[in-house]
Image 1 (spheres, rainbow, N blue to C red):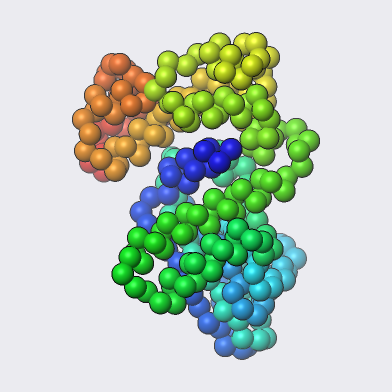
Image 2: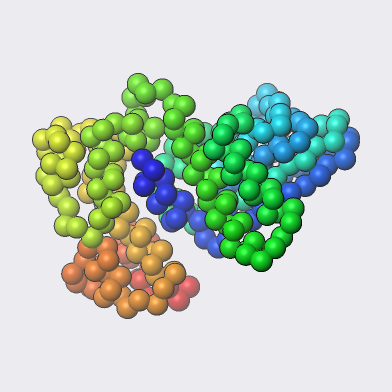
Length: 273
């Protein structure tokens, strides 16, 4: 599960995440407009406040509470007392958003807990006192915070969930297949070899994987390969033949065809853009 979450964070965003520490003087109110293509969070460091959303009951936040808005929903924070918050956002590449994130609700609210508190405290320290290395530490701490958020939320989901990524990650059969695909995307996987990796026969495995993740095994494998390829193209100058090999294609032509089918543009043009 942790490997899959790490991969989700690695591929989902484009550019650097941003964060700010803000001291609000009472009485205060701040609107945060909807931001398509972004995922944001709010952390209450000191004091408390209310989070207001359209068509939703006010949400009372206390010191240590963390709110994650994975789909960039607009909201307002307000209170009659002084409050200190930490806010941040991840710019998300829509074509690379993992279905795991799409499965999340509009708002995830988590109260203070050890892992989150540690990540928040370190991030707060770096934002209050920028020093040598802060430019590298802040994005890394934001990634850590996101992983802790996702890990905590999935851990709270009922083990008997029938479908969705919470169920997929908690299912030993499907989770084993996901781990295998993420661990070795270039391996010549088939439904049969993934089923063997999961300890189940071919047909029952394929039905179970599709029922929980919403995609057949080979469809997910191709999507993940093309997502990894997009990241490599954006972050390196490796030749297309090397990128193709890294995601399991012996032929550069076959890779380019699959990539264009997934992203709507040839690999070379994608890289230049």
